[in-house]
Structure formats: structure tokens, C-alpha cells
Amino acid sequence: MNLLSWLISPPGVATVAFILVVVVTILGALIAVSARNIFHNVLGLVLALIGVAGLFLFLNSPFVAMMQILIYVGAVCIAICFAIMLSEPMYLPKPPRSSFKTLGAVIGAGTVFAFLVLLTKKTTWTPAPERSTDWSVTTMGHYLLTEYVLIFEVISLLLLVAMLGAIVIARGGRGAS
Amino acid sequence: MEFLTQMLGADVARMVVGLIAIIALVSVNALFLIWMERKVAAHMQLRPGPMEVGWHGAVQTVADAVKLMGKELITPTDVDRPVYHLAPIVIFLPVLLSFLVIPFSQTLIIRDMNVGVLLILAFASLTVLAILMAGWASNNKYSVLGAIRSVAQTVAYEIPLLITLMSPILMVGSFSLADIVAAQERYWFVLTQPLAFILYIVCATAETNRAPFDLPEAESELVAGFHTEYSGMKFGLFFLAEYTNMFIVSALATIFFLGGWRGPFLPGIFWFLIKVYAIIFLLMWFRWTFPRVRFDQLITFAWKILIPLAFANLLITALIMKLR
Image (cartoon, rainbow over all chains, first blue to last red; front, side, top):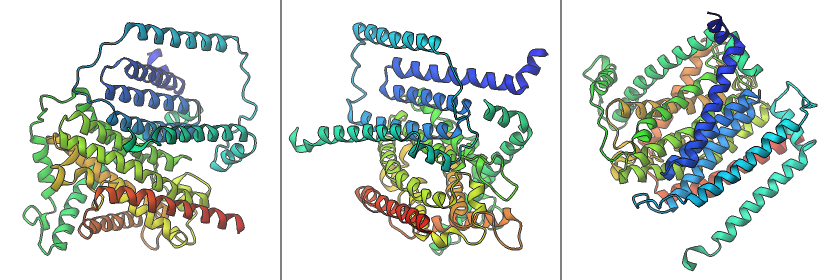
């Protein structure tokens, strides 16, 4: 009875929601790396990204959560699907998974994970200085173009590099290959 | 944390009632729209359309729905099973969620969120994923072709759609749909943003996969496109999602450009529904007026005409806002 009343109280609901979101994220990530059908990989990625959007929602920023779904699920994953259509046909037998590569991936991911855990443990967390409740578009736009303008510019540089890369790859055109 | 607590703790009852109302609205709307589509199509071709079941065939769709539910669900042998079964659900859930933020009248709104527009657009972008899942998992060349066309089309049309909606948002300075309606107290935005309205209607037609942009399900070329292999109520869910999508894009057009629930004499909800169904009628009218475009025409039109126009509109809006 006590557990039940906790479950329907706001903190209880929030905790259950958090666990659900984390499970969805991890499950999606596992599907994304382990499924053998490349289309299932993308769907796993979609699930993981929706889970991450849930985490953003949990961190009290619905704007970022919606942008996450709109851009990562709605645009990036669809772009990946485009890439799949250009890749090898799916009816061919799939080559066996190379255990060497799997091991390398596990070690690489494990190192990053251990590093992040250490980093989280070592850091003394202070609340962000500007915890404001005003998250209107105007405020966010002001922040992006004043305080955080460097980040904004760096991201646009990243996009520029990506675009240049795409042009370099595609420059040969169809006739060249 | 605060956001979730606020959402779930304070008004669970409101959410439950709202969700039930949404499901009722979605079903009734689809039944009505299918009848309306058949009637509009028939009268444009100088024939009466369904006449037998009920007054002027008004209950025909109910009979069809009962038939559809009684049908056997056939699963073809070589489908990609989990994805095949998930696709109808994935296409239906997001359109259901979009109703959460739509203001039907001044007070009739389940939850006014300050990211309302983004929520609808984000969930609308999931539709294409479901179409891709359905087409791919069906293991049928017509389905895959339909799905591929749908992806290319949606990628092309989502960009001008988003940019177009940015102009009215810039004028209001808020993503909340209630705020956008509130800002149209003196005049409707269709008067100040006529180009944006036209662009939006074009993109919305493409977004809902309707003629002249119905290439993903062009029945004379692709049987039924991405849902060729679906039968019974699974096909029914695709159908339901399509008509609900029509309602949502028309509701967005109403909220953004036609003043939402504003209007004299009648209560807000009546004005809202009148405007929404007027836009839906316009979309149906398009279907029986314009021939289907060719695929390269469709893509070229989006990238070379719609996107530059939408950008120009946004720039001019920003300039006027700044100078005023």
C-alpha cells in the first residue's frame, strides 16, 4: 500500500518515468549495435534517440527534447535510411561478425565509459549559474547570440566542414566512377 | 523533473479525459472525412457517391469500418515480422499525441506547452519513419518504392514547411499555439503572411501524401504504395492516421493563419471546426483538380522554388519586424 501510494505520487511517477526512459535508451543502443539487419540498427538508433529526448524532458527542457526528436529522429535517421538504400542489397548473406572488431569496439567504448564515470565522480557539481525559468524562444535566441555565441559559431563551423566533405566526396559525379 | 511532476501530478484527470476525447475525435473525424472525401469526389465528377446506407450514405463508412474490423489479418510469409507489426502503431501514436497541444477554443486545450508547434512538427516527422518501416518490412517492391518516394518527398517538403512556419512564429515570439491564436486578435495572419499561407498549404498537401503529391501511394503506379501488404485493421490504422494527419495539418493552418477559434457569434470550437473542415475541403478539391506531378518535378519544385521562397519570406518578415 505504501509502495502503491509512492508510485502514484509525483516523485514516484517521475522515478518510474526516469527508469523507463533509461531502459528505452539502453535497449535502443543495444539494438543499434548488435542487430544484424542494418535497417533494425537504424530503428534501434531511433529508439535510443527518443530515449535521450525523454532524458532532456526529464531535465526540464522540453525545447531541447523536441529538437532532439525533430532533428535526430526526423532528419538524421531518415538521412541514414537514404544511405542504407545506397548500400549493398539486403538479400545477400551477411558476412560473419569479425570478433577482432567486436573486441576493439568493446575496449574503445569501455574506455570512454570508464573515463566518463571517473569524470563524473571527480567533478564537484555546482548548479548552473543562470538557472532561469524563462525558456522562451526570445531568451534562448539572446543567449545563443550573446553569451554562447562561440558555441554557436563552432557548431556552424562543424556544419561547414561536413558540407565541404560531402562536396569533396560527391565531386567526382556519376561519370567518374 | 519539475516539468514531469507538474504534468503528471497536478492534472492527471485532465489528461485522461483529454486522451479519451482525442480518441473519440480521431475516430469520428476519420469516419466523417472518408464519407466527405467520397461525396466531394463524387459530386466533382457529377455522380451522387454513396447513397444507400443512411441519409445520403452518411453511415456508409461505419459499415465499412465494421467490415474492416471483421477481416482476417494476413501476414505475408517473407515479411520482416517485428517491424511489419510495429509500423501501423508507429504511424498512429504520434498523430494521436499531436492533439495534446491543439487549442480547440479559448479554454478547450489539453495542455498548452510553450513548445507546442515543435511538438507537432517533431511527431509529424515520425510519420515518415513509420512509412519507411512499413514499406521496407513488407518485402514487396511496390511497397519499397512507395516508401523510398515518401522519404525523398518528406525530406524535401519538411524543410520549407518548417521555415514557412517560422515567419508567423517570429511575429508572435512564441512556440505556444495558444499564444499564436492570441496574437491574431486584430487581424488574421493570412493577411500579413499570404505567401507563407500558400507555401504552407502546398507543403501540407505534400506532407499528408495527397494528390497532386500522392506519389508514395500512387495507386495507378504502385498498387497501394507502402501499405500494399497490409490487410484488415492494420490497413485501417494507416487509413486512420492519414485522415487524422489531414485534420492536424488543417488545424495548424487554422491556428497559424486563420485566427484559430476566433470568430463572431458562435462559440470558439464551432469556428475552429468550420475553418479546419474548410481547409480539408480545399485539400480534397486539389485532389480532383490537379494531375499528379512527376517525381523529379516534385523534388525540383521543393528544392528550387519552395525553399528559396520560404527563406525570402522569413528574411522579409525579420526585416520588417526589425524596422518597425
